[in-house]
Image (cartoon, rainbow over all chains, first blue to last red; front, side, top):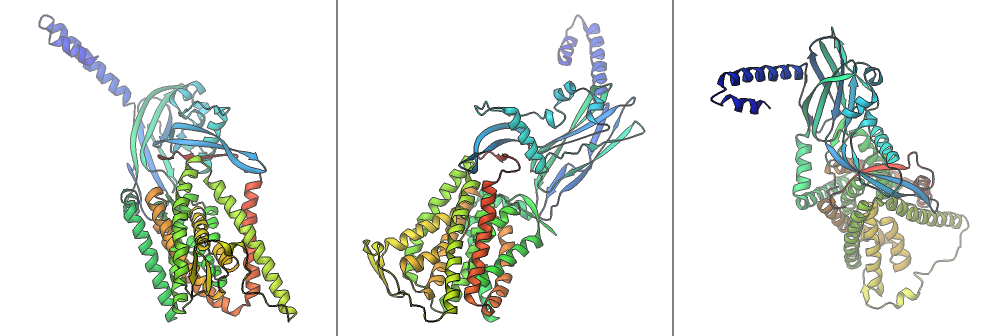
Length: 260
Length: 307
């Protein structure tokens, strides 16, 4: 839209009108930018380094809002992945995986925090529209002939919660003097690697006024990362190395035992 | 103290896994078994993905069987010829097993098959061992029991391709050790075990090998078969975690030393009875998990690229 108006500015006959429109457009653009900047947020770190001693990580999300009292919802979404959900059935007395349904676009990690309980902030419809809350996580399921996709979806979320990848507890966003806010985000030690999006939603009177997304990367670093990369890129040499290590360890142990 | 396992992709307590390695190492030193059949279920109970547990345990068994085989080698208790025939079978079996493993993983049935294999084989072996040791103990109590024949002759001795194995004083069909090798190779790949607990009774009862040769020869074969499993799992499935393997090896070496010393002070038949009870205990635990209603009938897994 702005480009179109700028185009009209180069029109020779309506130069004055054009510059007026340009000014208006700039103002409009500025206004919209100001709207987008109704909330500014950042993370204490944009990289979570999964090192050999990694035991989970805690990040601080902090920011400021403009204007009157408002509610803040923070959602952390991990990289999307394809997940197969299997259901066991009793066949001949033994529990066997019998039905499955594949979901795509499933966030590998999902965490949310808010200033107040979600249901006190806004309606279910708004939450669903923005994919906020465990029951509103966006994912697509392949059309399965295996009964009810909703139970499979619930099972997926339940299993993710059990793994600690969809932390159950709603985190707390603390507002300081209706201007500044902060929230502590905890990532468990089994946090999946990849690109994350941390989205801050600003709501007033139950409506989403503004949203800002900050990127976050979870990446293996150091010796562990090197081992992982080597195991996948040069898997033949990795296999030979693993055998060599075991042969040496076995020989060494035998030699020590003999002396003792 | 935590360590992040790069292949299993989770953080574990170093001392817990060193302790597990030491505990199983102690038992294997005590009973003279490989311990894979105890370690793999333990790793799975501890939260290591079954695929990683099986492949990594194969890597650890390479180490433990090298030190065991070397000790037997020095005492001249390895029959290389029959060992080579066994390991040719083992190569084919384990290669086929790793392929089946990948296939079952894609179908989502690998956990079931691992557990079923454990229940069936641990159940049979545990029961046989228990009966055998109870009999031996009662035989000790009333002396003068009849001496067993060296080995019985049956239809197995009518098979073609007979070979002479001087060391074990045997003249049998090469198909027998070859077949045992194939079977044990498949089990090694799927169950993450050396297969000694199957191979040793098979060598004694089916082949009629002298007991003194059995353990050293089976360890010799296990080195190569588990090395093959390690290589194939690392190459095709990228499921060998060398950090985890190192933890288990370190714990295992220390535990085995104490186990061997403790084992020298305990009477053999009682030991065998105790081992039988442990084997049956693991079997019962796994059987219960198959038969009891699971906490959640649903489970999730990542889609495999080549599944």
